Length: 109
Image 1 (tube, helix red, strand yellow):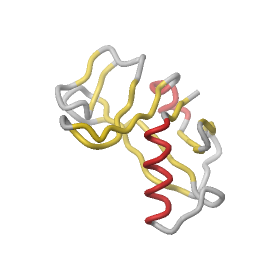
Image 2: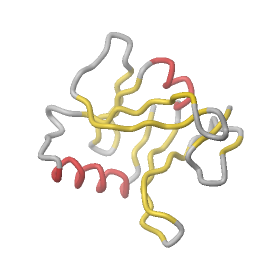
Image 3: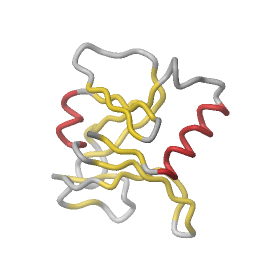
């Protein structure tokens, strides 16, 4: 399962409204790709095409889709959003990450 916090849900809803897309047509695609100073980095975007091996979840009213390989890194991860002084944006609370870089953009397992 991939979880979505209340603050992340509000921001995703807001971004969908700004982009004039609906949750009935689009979903949040989350993936893990090679890169960053720790080896792996998160990627997130709106999408409307599912692939055959995609894993689909819904939490807090947000449909989240990920490919099978990425899901192995993301199982039980929570998507969060912060508007704090130390940084504004989405971040992942990933219990599978053994370490992450100082900026929080990448991780390793």
